[in-house]
Image (cartoon, rainbow, N blue to C red; front, side, top):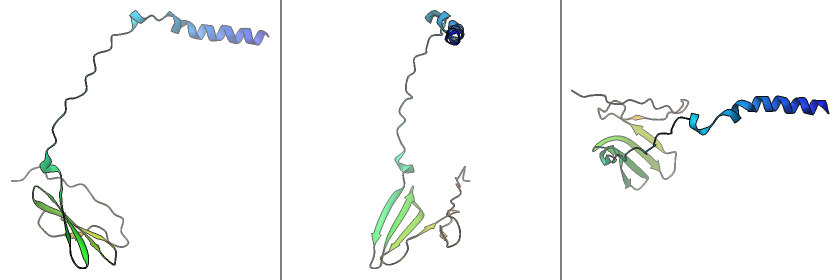
Length: 112
């Protein structure tokens, strides 16, 4: 029985600082307003053109009218993707057998 008394006294001593706090000691909470909505620039959204041919479906992805990615889905076979890494119009396969799929971000900071 004395163990419960010691436990009660210990818990009440630990809870005493919490009970001593009052609402006046707390700093006021500032008004939190949500951030203003910024309209999206639709020119940054990729435009996808789907072309169906006899043996495959080709998806052309463009941003600001510039072609940067081509996805080819053949009727019988494995789909593949070609990307323009440097922006010079030469497309290379995104995935090759035996290599992991890795796309390193390359943003254009400025053009002269």
